[in-house]
Length: 385
Image (cartoon, rainbow, N blue to C red; front, side):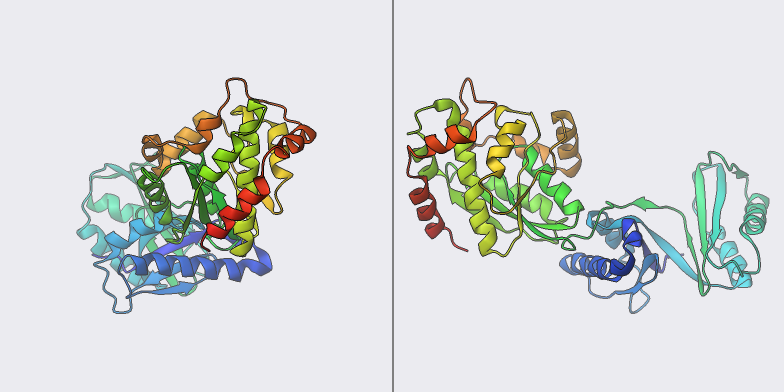
C-alpha cells in the first residue's frame, strides 16, 4: 500500500496571530520552490489551520520517497511525514487497517497506537479506538502492546472530514520560512563561523546575500562551495558579491600603530557592507562574530565596529562558544569546506599583541593617517551591483 499525501505541521507559525496567513503562504511558496527546483511539478498544497497537506494532481505517489527528504531543508516546518488520508468513516477505517497490516513488513515485537481526535464528535473516542485496534493487531500477529517504550508507534489523527494514518514522524528545521523576515547581507569569510551565522539567520526567516573580501583570486572555489551548500536552505539563493581587498590592505599598512590595523580594516569592511546593502535595498548586515572569541570581538571592539554602520548589525553567534559553532558547522555540512586551505585577508593583519579595548578617539585619529574614504569610494565604483 502506498501513502497518498505528505503532511507538514507548523511550529511557531501557529502562534503568529493575525500575521499567520502571511507566514503560512511563505512556507507554501518555499516548499513549492523546493519541489520545482528538484524537477517535480505535479503537486498541490492544501492549507489548513495547523498543517499543510500535499497531494499529487493525478494521485500518483511514486515520487513520495524522493520528495519527503526535500522537506528537511525548508525552515518553518516543525514535523513532517508521509501519510494515508482516509475518509472520516469508522467502517472504512477498520477495513483500511485490516488491509494495511495484511501487507505490512515488520521488524519489531512491541507497538502502540497514538490516537488523537481533532473532531470530538467522532463516533468512538481515542481510548476505545486504541483498545480496539490494538486488539485487532495482537489477535492476528505475535506483537505485544507496550504503551511506555514501544519499538513501533502507529499514529491516527482524526479530523471532521478525514483521518490521517502514518507510521513515522520526521523533525523539521523549525524557525520561520526563509524570506518571511526580509533579507540580510552577510560578511562571509573563509572560516568556520560565518556559514553557521548564515544558517542561524535563515532560521529566523532571513534570506542571505553574501559579501566576501578576497585576498587572491585563487581558491575562491571554497567560498562558492560553502554558499552552494547553504543555498538549499536559503530558497536556493546564492548571490555572492566578491570584493578585492588589496586596496584596503595596502592602505591599512600605513597605520602607525600595528595593533589597531585589523580593527580599522574591519571598520572599512563594515562601511562597504552598508553601502552595498543600501544599493541592494537590504536593511541589515551581519557577521559571524562571537563575543570574546578573539581580540577583535571584545565588547569594546564590537562597539567601534557598530559605530561606523549606518544599518543594523546582526551577530547571530554573539553568545556561542567555539565548540558550539564547530558542532553546528558539522551538522549543516560546512565544517570540512571551511577547513580547506584559504588565505583570509584578515589574517595578514593579525598582530602579535592586538588591541582588546580599542578607543574610538584613537581609532579616528589613526584613520586620519590614511586615505580610507578615497579607497572606499574607489572600491565602490568597481563593485558591480
